[in-house]
Length: 136
Image (cartoon, rainbow, N blue to C red; front, side, top):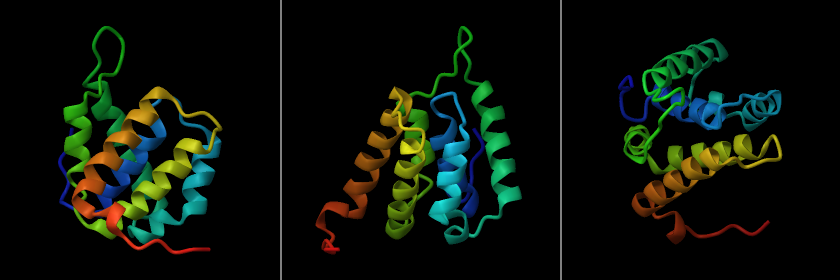
């Protein structure tokens, strides 16, 4: 996998791209969820840049194929998540990742693993659980 600068638009964009393809299926509803989230604007990444990151991620994932299946082990996922250190960026990304994963109405096992790893890794270091909650 390529390495990106910590908290860079590319590192953040790759996490979003991974949320879209980790289950092996990119759906139009996931693209709409990405657009509705406005996360690309937040991370300062344009659509063309995101599309290139998505292509690069898919190319990199093909390097992990074993017996015809992509192998994204926990260590690899954790190394990608570790490129995001800023707590507010983590929070915004996690919200967008949930929206993307939920967009097609089905939470695939691979999506659940990615979301669980991100939640565990990022909340432990970002004190998500200690943040005051806003009531609607």
